Image 1 (tube, rainbow, N blue to C red):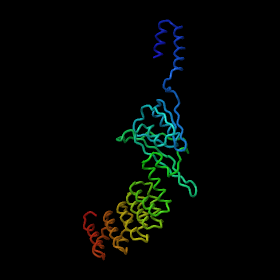
Image 2: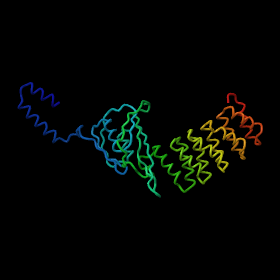
Image 3: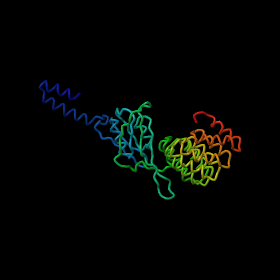
Image 4: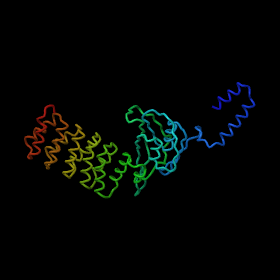
Length: 328
């Protein structure tokens, strides 16, 4: 507006008035309690998992760049990067601050677990942030990379709930810590069961370690069941090993049932061996069910033998129900 006025006055031949108006305009602009200038540099500071930030009419693209730089995390934005952000935050918890910055858009936060020394709880460091502008958006995301890992977002694992609550990835990390470190078998069992509900690929290796080495048969059984629920190819070998070598029959049963869910053909030999030779009928029954699910000629031949020869009626019935199915 001021530019248009000055141009008009110049055209009217009034240079002195122009100069006077410019001085008055500058003085008024400095004295008025106007909103922050768009040219004001955005600021964001993260200390001990809390955020103080000020964005005054800053383009969203610039905001995402600042978030990536200050948090040390990679930001992936799904949708059109458009609009400006106006926000003023003071010592807000990290995820709550980000929720406000992203203006309520859905977001997922991925954390890395870091060791914190002997006897200390593990630490979490923010690794990636996925922001979804539209629930139906499936395009490739715009990526904003951090130049270096920041320590500002590192926090104790047990503080997950205080950092924004119910985000799935933080919850999974806490369960993994509980599974690995708890001295209470019931606590480890509960962690394994809950990890099974998460379908998380990140849980497969820790669950496999638990299945192979936990002293509690109940925990190993829960780990085998959870591995099956991941439907992961990486879960197949730990389940094969448990089916072949675990001393507890209930663990072997769950390993067989887990192999039915992962449906890996590489498990057929171990399942046939269990069907033909395990002393517990319920392990053989689970092996028959898994072989029927996976299918194939070798599996069908073993099922036909079990349907005719297994000493237990339940096992014969299960094997027969699969052996007669065409196309298996």
